[in-house]
Image (cartoon, rainbow, N blue to C red):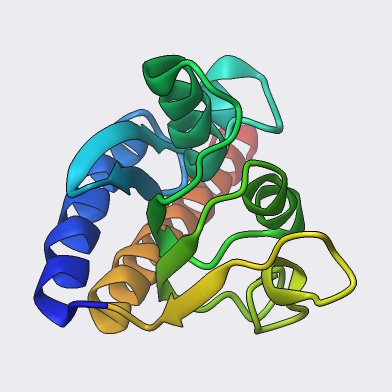
Length: 166
């Protein structure tokens, strides 16, 4: 574990989150690294692809499997701007990712310690090492600003609709 390296890769994940936001998606980015090299990266694409599984982690892991031509991603670290949900946490276990580094915790669906801890459950056949809170403020602010803007836009649209109807 190297704080500088963790922050470097988390900043890259934050850049990937921009891609999601530009597509109207929740701004979450993920990068999978092996030997300090990117083997997969992704961002949320569920809305644009009409695929509920197209989370940032899922996209990065799919790309990594193709890159290394293996479904086992041993000796890798996944950097993601938001704590994984239970679907993505299960994927980390199944793909044998060694380490998870996330930015903001997710009090509603976080499955790496916030709501539950799937990635480190000793009942499962693989546990993932977890480092949470890397650039947490920056990651959390990005999400908060997105949802604040989205609420404002919805209110504005509702107001426009009401004014047009009267």
